[in-house]
Image (tube, rainbow, N blue to C red):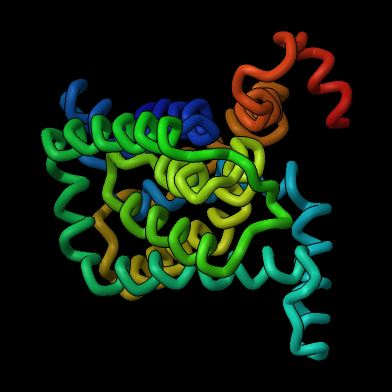
Length: 265
């Protein structure tokens, strides 16, 4: 992979990460269509680290509050506080991805080399979202989240390790199916992504350091990371994508994007 390819794929990752479509699928299909070498899991996780910055920028206040509430819950031995329940729900919801990713790592790595399978998985994401929209009652807000809800949404995240199944799409669909409102499902989906992306990237870096990488040059990884971060972090588009998608579907008038951004500053 040359540096131009790394930048193009990094920008593509930043442009698609906050939508319920699989950014990993684009990292498989675009090189395949253009005749480039497959980037592999290491590059995929590094550009995900780039766009993770957008999530951290948007949710840093929420994260601090959740961490404090989660630690307090340990001392009190109670999850009565909704913030504590959400915090430990994130922990619980991360476990399925850890288990499934560890058990089937070889399978997922092979799927990154199979564009036809990735194309089929894109359709699965669409079907999941349509199904969830139809069956979900969308009555509950995020403070109503239960640990059962968190575990089932975590299963959606585990399934989405396969390239082509959108992580945000699968987790939001699971949240909607459990009765969460669109905004609540989207917010928990983004929060749930943080430990999973950090852990996956860290694991791939450890493997690369031990000589198990797929041959992507460190400079290409750096350029891809930077391009994804620039495309997805400080730009207004990243915040607008999150703010618009998390607005309850079909409620209220269409809001001017510039007004959304100004309210989030």
